[in-house]
Length: 234
Image (tube, rainbow, N blue to C red; front, side, top):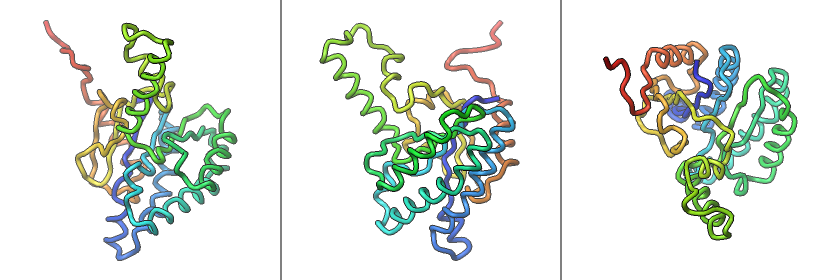
């Protein structure tokens, strides 16, 4: 069973377009998928679920859509917080909160504090997140540590670099799921998915349910993870 599952929640816009609805309605419909998948992960003892909620590149979308998405995320957190807390889910932000609207930053902080003691599952929301941005931020921070004389170049290794990522305590995802049928990783967890198993489904995110998650996990369980090595060699 994977300890950490990461999901690229793709297909909200296409789901809405297929129904001749505004794109935002696709994002609204995706909330039910978040509920079901979080519960399903908890039921099968997944320890961490990370959802690609709003990428660093999503700021390039029309201002009206970005503003509506920020409002929608804030509203969803406010309305889902109690249920997540009762389910003993710990909610954490993955990303840079600085550019987010003050109301959303405050709501994230409130929910993080409310759920900080929960231990059933960690639900990480990647908001204003980009893999390249995270790596660059870590490299700059590490370079500053070396420049200040607190660390020698000869001491640098992956563990030192990892300490400067957004969530150093986060285990790498064993399984990366992308809904919507596209075959790309979209600047998501680039450092952490070096050896993640990737599962792509054509199911659009608003239609993604627990049964689809279980299909992905079953597929994962049938794979042979070699991490660059060779197994079953006589």
